[in-house]
Length: 100
Length: 224
Image 1 (spheres, each protein chain N blue to C red):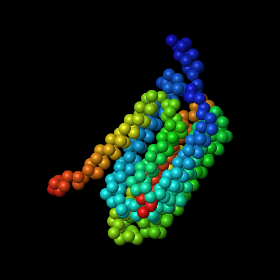
Image 2: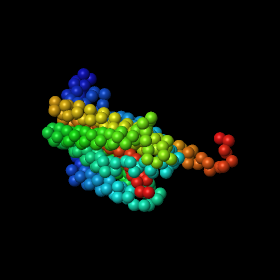
Image 3: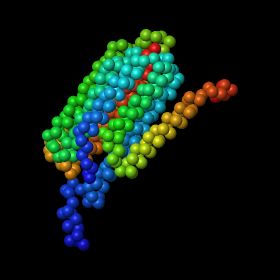
Image 4: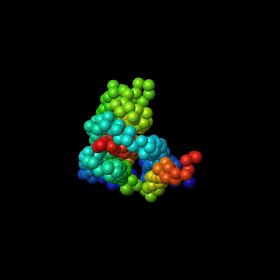
């Protein structure tokens, strides 16, 4: 409400960056980089997501309470993925546990 | 006492509900509430992304082989369409902040059209999968017989994730249509445009989901 209106230039710059990153991610996917293909694709996706959250969703100017909730959401998502993968990725590391 | 209440009631803007101190607090409550909802959506999609990650690690070769049957051209174009729709959505919110009714309606309609373009292209893709017998189930055919079962898991995840995303797009399109009607009926002003801003947040969230779906489903294992 008390927020100043953001100029169209800022939004256009973010839009341009998002388009450029989309082209980059398609171009990088055509290169043979092994495991790095996945890392590059996810890094670009995280950058794009951050741009949308910060500028389009205006979290950079949001109240501390809203920022805390957004951060908590991402933290809980991290708990979900880290604990899930720490189970699945570590299966078979100990060969003597075949009876499981 | 009665006098001060009368003065307060007269002082605040007509859109301000009486249980809020001021408009800023009212907007803050709406924004926080919307974000709580979006966090539940993050967890909802997070479960599906988690399932995808687990199966991709179990059957990496099968998943890599399926990405050859994904239409990267349509996927990339649709990514651009959604990003453009997020841009027009943010311009709609900006027009609302400035109290520009015509621009607000124009940008909302443009956002709605772009959403429909995305869904139409999604339909083309689903039709391709149908023609190629890539729908998991009794009619499923796969070029590489080694991956017949494992590839079905990927295609199931593809339809579940993009389908759930498409349902969110359809809901978003309905919400945009409602906003257009509300804007045309002069329901918004430079001092109150909260629904435009909240549905904007939803629309951007759906965009972010696609930003992650596109590389995972279309690009990973693209080379090989």
